[in-house]
Image (cartoon, rainbow, N blue to C red; front, side, top):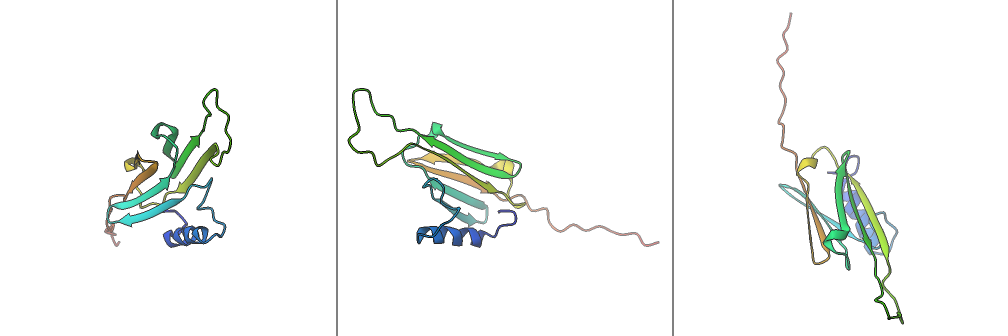
Amino acid sequence: MFANLDVFDELESMMRAMRGGSSAAVSGGVRTHLSTDEDGWTLTADLPGVGANEVAVKVEHDVLTLSSKRSLAVPDGYEPVRRERRDWDFERSFRLGPDVDPAGVQAAFSDGRLSVTLPRRAASGPRSVDIHIS
């Protein structure tokens, strides 16, 4: 799925992040999960406190970009006593490999979870060319 990147390297990077090591897989506190089946790949990201209208997904030049901004406004007349949740911006990009059909990418957002479906490109099959011998 990813050009010049082994899916297992990405998963190992995610595992390092879960064990507390540094990793590019964790950006802005947002964790992603990548799974695959015969139809393609599914990338999920947990975005708690974000509405569907605050999430952007785009594919441009074979790069999938997820972005969001969470703003926690305090209602007029209230003063926070303690704030453990913060405003934040999130952006994460993934280079798509030649097996992904960028025109078929779809996204769904429900209960704070973004799911991006990355379909496999239709197999072109082996190419055979007859060569004329002179």
